[in-house]
Length: 343
View 1: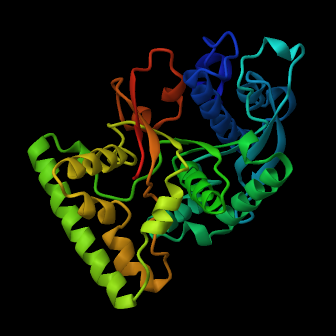
View 2 (view 1 turned 180 degrees about the vertical axis):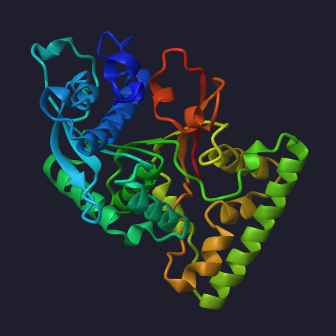
């Protein structure tokens, strides 16, 4: 039996009665629903729901998209992503400027059902180990994005993902940015590889731990990079700073909440005159630095120079709600948005 959360008419953003692509809430809701469409596509496949019984199409039809093609994992044959193409309704002159994206490439996160559990969890572990970029799923995603950019241009494309899917979208977006292609990107509950310090209630203790961690991270980075005689990474990080993805995090979600502290602490370090330490620490991870000799890249996959960070301030009943994709199109959503840009 289908979950209520899979049925658009029961849990979708029916309050969006008109298309307004200038409105961030509308754009955020559209991106989140297209990601949800990928989740439901895979559940339709698992439950063998086809034709009129399929639940997924409503999630993209509502926003006038159609499936261009699906992204399938060759290991477990699950649908992990989709390339959506916008169908311009007639008459199109009723739509606001700017125009909607011509293509949206969306990636789902982990599904803990028997068909997908094993492969999804293996990829979760690969991300923690800084090896997701070596997976066939990521390579497939990267190829799909490059092919779509070649057809439509980066300015006409969005990337979107949730949880593991946002990790894939983040890595793809960073790779494309290094090539000079800045793609508008929506990352919902992106995983941050760190202890969830944001959950510490004592602000002085939390800041003290972060400060000590920054000093230690900067020291290890200088020592390791010095020993290996590798060039400073500032240039690479600065090159990415012009790409500003939209990050959507919930402070009650331990998987993504540390992004709040990551950006806020960087500002505090600058304010107290510790900008150099902050600059080095913000682009390094001790775990990645010490393990990179075993095949990982020096750059941590989750760290970003710049982002539009949106924090959900609405109360969450449990982890499922705090980490869920549905929160991001709720009409009652209370949030705070801040632009963080690395300089």
